[in-house]
Length: 497
Image (cartoon, rainbow, N blue to C red; front, side, top):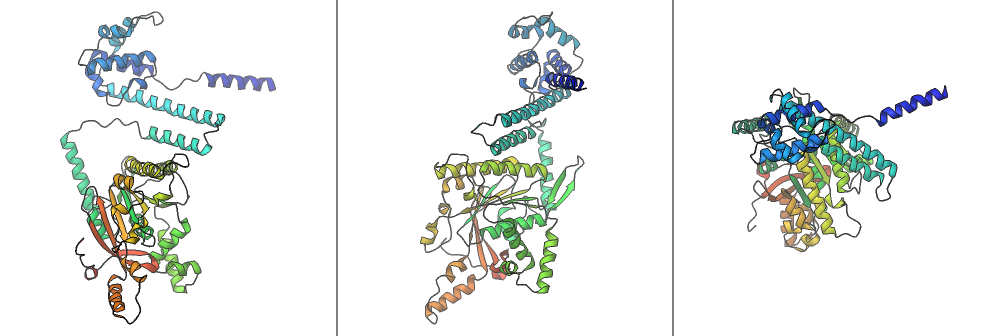
């Protein structure tokens, strides 16, 4: 019995060793024949099919030479192709005879696109097999300079790259089609709350300046400590997740029609701290009271009601600290693939590391990080908000409103960002320089404090596709909530800016 089992195992092993990668030689022959008979068939597949997608080496060479001839404005026929392919023996027939047979057996060019898609799809499957084999071999070899985490990230990168290929559309389109797309975009903006082209932040005045958060934009939100950067981005992220509404298309894909699915990389705070902030904002109960448990019964019910409402929100938090830009990219891709993604938040970018060795110039490392974040926003076609610290030179100025030059290691941040915003609260600086009570300076200081109390400014220092300027917001420090200011509470225009 043992010998029989061993024999079966050996047969199974032999079958596995001789398993052939997926391919379809008939489809390859049919396509090549159609192109040789009528070179116009080449243009039906030329924008997505490459020689490497063919399984048979001879077919690769035929398609490569055919492509070169057609692109050069020459005719590809069995006679012209023979000049470049030679006339070796192919197991009883010559290359000339094989080309003639392809042409003779070609039926029509109508199915050329279908043949091309079949060849392409099979090539993708072979690449998928190759990725799997490379992953297995790499795991078995266990090279010293490649950790398991690095191997996982490399496999994810290859798989995501492969997942994003395989499109047969693209190339030129009729202007009428472009018009239809533009009208559809306008219709979606009209139907979306706030009538915005991008995703609404939930803050009317900020939306008016930005037009909402635009897909593929890298938005930098910067400020000195205690200005409320995390509070503002948390408010925005929550507003977007709360407003989420999706509709299922005919192909089964769920399309976001309002709000969005949010991914939040909290590199500084834990997920519990972040959740406490959001619950405080929504329930109106200060976060310090929630942490201490110093709440009344009615406040506890407010808290549980707010938590229950947030249970179903598409808000995903990654609290892993000290990750690299490569790890962040891999996790963002995975989230989009598994759950969907409409907004990505990184709090904050100086806590990310690059791929270089330790001791590398920090400016160069930050350039890699910001370039990677911009590339990720474009790749995933979502707005990406990254928080950034500001240098201490702000504190040395009389007017402490931040400027683009204040961005720490600023060159790459300012260059890669589509939008740069600063959070500024005059109240914070005023309360730290209170004059002696009863003096004239104190009365003046008190008037300034009354004017600045509960107010914040979002200064848009750069916007690639829109205006710059200042948006004024209300800020409730005890519950870390940013809201729109009532019209009569707007801050006065600043003179001399």
